[in-house]
Amino acid sequence: MKNYNLNEKIIFSGEKPIKRHFLNAKGFHAALICLKSGVEIPPHPEDYAVLLTVLEGNGIFTDINGKHVLTKNQSIYMEKDEIRGIKAESDLVVLGIQDRIKSGNG
Image (cartoon, rainbow, N blue to C red):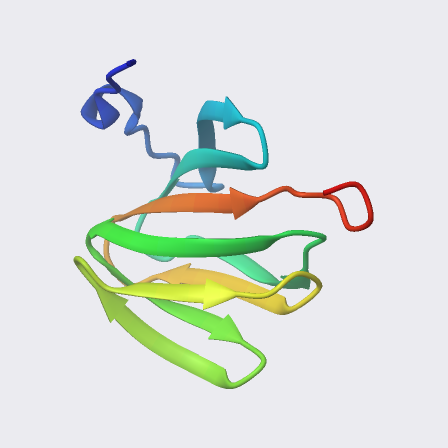
């Protein structure tokens, strides 16, 4: 068993999102994403599915269905190759669990 103190990984930049991977397991990765209020990850496709859970703050999450405001303890799941984006409305800390299983290889 390994414990992770996510509070130690929270770092903000007024210019860009800070993404800190802390677990790289077979088939999935876990990362903490920190966005200072007003900082944005513009909508873009990714080659993996992801479950995003807000740990602190709130933000606007964009997916194929539009824009969704999420606050503490709310989650959104996005499929592989789905458009996704985040804009922090306040200082935002998000836990991302990425599905990294490659198709055809199990």
